[in-house]
Length: 114
Image (cartoon, rainbow, N blue to C red):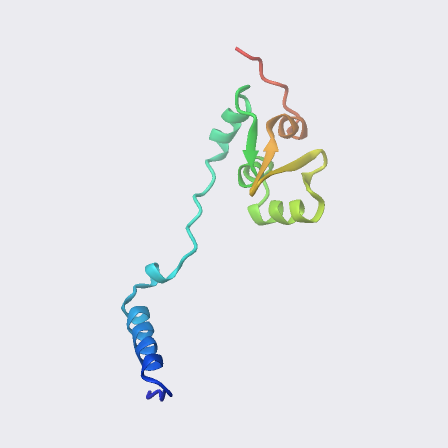
């Protein structure tokens, strides 16, 4: 493919861009960082029974509730809640769920402080 440019500077940048993009591997061209998966359900239940653990992410809450992360995110965006009585708190860019509200929704008792 031959490209015609009106000036030499345009040809330089076009050739530079072509060379740098073609020299990159697919991993280098993707800019979106990979998210780490949430911990297993058993690990999250032990955290839920810990009185010092106060909040969970939306992804962790979805695992505890037995729903997918996308379902939890859609529910939060639509209503501000994951399910009845479990609201999502937005702190800057971070969205967290109160452990106490999760325990209530799952029918668990409050853990004893040690």
